[in-house]
Image 1 (cartoon, rainbow, N blue to C red):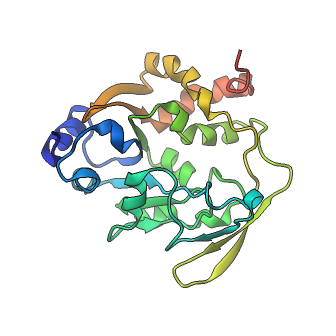
Image 2 (cartoon, rainbow, N blue to C red):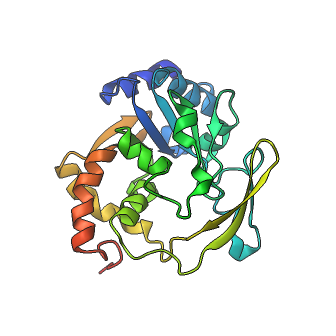
Length: 249
């Protein structure tokens, strides 16, 4: 059985220092048996990244979906659809959650408020000036625990920034409610033709270029990705071939 201490050891073995800005995509089940279960995993992350910035994707797109007649996000009550760790994390003391109606980010640590600021003011999910762009500017990393690049939403951001034609012609009209119970309309150009299931197509290149390295967290096969290196490697590929992830043959 894994413990907080053994999980901390796993993080050190990855070459992490604890000062990083890091976003974690995760499958709790893949980690295996942990003494203290999901809360112990979050405790390990919070302890290790105490001097850094710990991020989880508290996305809500399955629940805030205008096509299904649900256009309303409440930062204090709308659950995350990205697994047990993100859902538990955003409820924890000290954690801040951004106000984006479909792709909110939860943050704990250094400059957390600055990182999530104004997320609901941009008209695209992965706007270069928002939190996804700040991950690049702040030399961020992504840890994919028990999942592969098909869960790495940062690649969608790289597509948007490279000019891949993927945004809806008309904005989706949503509403975001903040902690003061103030509702703000958000007009959001949606990504159409989602194809993240083929993001692993770039994995051999990322491994060869050391953008990503294979590590282990508990029992989970894990990928550690450098955001700046991913940007530098994938951007020219997408600019040369915008259909890189769309041509599936």
